[in-house]
Length: 167
Length: 167
View 1 (tube, chains in turn green, orange):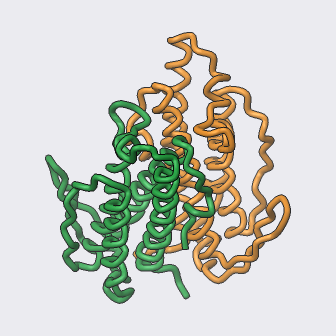
View 2 (cartoon, rainbow over the protein chains, first blue to last red):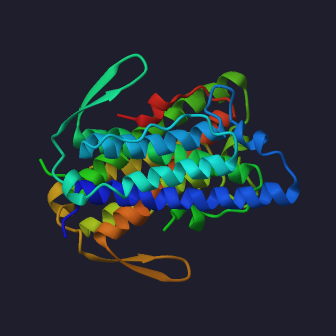
């Protein structure tokens, strides 16, 4: 089977969203056991002008969701960026996975040259499907996934690379 | 043009290796200006059982190099894991990029089903080319690249996402 736009996107996103959800569940258990305040984790950032932990998880979900929506042409569910707890972040990941699982290979394969428009706060990016996936969505997805994982590790949550790699 | 094993591997690796090399050059300038000891950065880790900064950069290079070697069937140059400075890590990245640039699309395209063996310390993994790339090399490459970047940010080096995204 030849590699395809679908193979490089949805299953990869789903695998690592599952991985991060498992990490968040371990964090939830750890913070509960230690009676730590989850808010300190939600707001944790490695540097003052970097995203907080909660924002890292939101961004990870958004890159997967928006990439899938733009390639497949199916509108993505709107998600408010209002999560206040690990449980709410886990729910966001689960909603994202549920949306990704509605995308069929046939809707995404062959979108290499499809013209897509990424709407950003202050401008629009005009890309082809393959550029969107390989130059923007995939690197950003892994960037935010990894930074969220690193924040968990740095805060003492006992997760490992195997969790991150997902299933 | 259809997405291909080459398109998903070598150009993506090279882009972000260039990105991280640029980050390391900024770190070099910053540590020199502040008269900070680079050794503290080389040894920095987010948690006692995580890889150090130097090891993160080595691992990023190795995933790109080994994936390219296994898919193309061309032996990769051996690199000692002996870097003691940012200059030496930058040289490692440059050697890795030089090797990746010798790989031709024709050597890597069509390797989706190719049987490859990943030799690990204590065992061997038997994978198909597409599994190697999508389930192992690509996620690990981005994992180590991002963690290296996060360590730089956490230590005050003024790099940004644009640097990470490479060219």
